[in-house]
Image (cartoon, rainbow, N blue to C red; front, side, top):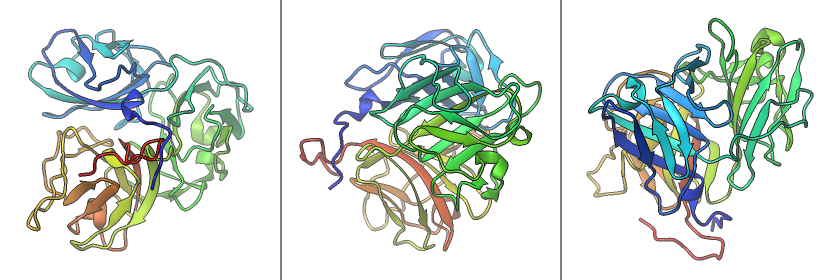
Amino acid sequence: MAYTTIDNPELYFQTKLYTGTGSAASITLDGDEDMQPDLVWFKKRSSVESNYLYDAVRGVTKEIYTNSESQESTDANSLTSFNSDGFSIGNANQLSENTETMVAWCWKANGSGSSNTDGSVNTIKTSANTTSGFSIVHFDLSGESGEETVGHGLGVAPDFIFAKTGLDKSGNSIWWVYHKGLTSASYYLSLAGTGAQASETQAWGGTAPTSSVFTVGDAAGWGTYKTVAYCFADVQGFSKFGSYTGNGNADGTFVYTGFKPNYLLIKRINSAEDWMIFDIKRSPFYPQSSSYSGMATRVSANNSNAEDLTQSGAEWYSNGFKWTTSWGGGNGSGDTYIYLCFGETFVNSKGVPCNAR
């Protein structure tokens, strides 16, 4: 059984659904415990809009977009504060357009953070939560020319990193993605694109992260600008970052996580496909009758499309998730997928099983 050290996942990750009003608002999370988020990822569900990210390290009103390689922007009417149990927003259309439905995924790091000196480049600030395996790393590559190392603060090697370069650059810069399920650290994905994994040592220098640092490639790949990286490490019973192979039929593939998933991000890596996000709030797709094909309400990290209600044949289980169709986005025959999954506790720290579905 997958015991966990986190008995209440709501202290570290929550999903919030709300409807915009066209006005400023304070949004309270739904969990039984208060959680002040340090990263909030917003997506408008009901119409076309970019994916917006705000974090406590770069500061409020500073936004970047997972579906774009544009530089960081400032919008005084966007996310205006991280609150003790939620966040406040202004009247910006991307977060509060009247009658538009929204989803906000919220993670807890460790506040605004402080400088980390573990790597060859000292960070501006690193906000690390070693309990939940999540850190936000803000650093500046100005004046650098070769490969560098950067401290992530987790104390264990990250399994998944997505980093936005060129925050202060005039023009576009790439989203570099590392995942332990790629062929090696000589490969990368772009969060803003659909492409398959590609070989490029400029991304991570061909070096997997260690318990203290990750490697960034030379200036030709990263540029000499400010960068933010979001780092995640497996925490048994709370989060899982792995890979699986699809079988292309209605019986499988089942992916074991050790907990009840409530958030799932997947990407096919051997050929082009969107980065697709599912969560239990928008799509509580549990096993039903034999005729039930599973409803997976999804949005894509790499584009601005509205929420897609098309059935994909996915189901949540008490200890993982499973595909029940040959849908190529999640279960193409012989295709390889990576995933990022957060969940509800299956077996708590005392060894007591939680309620199964």
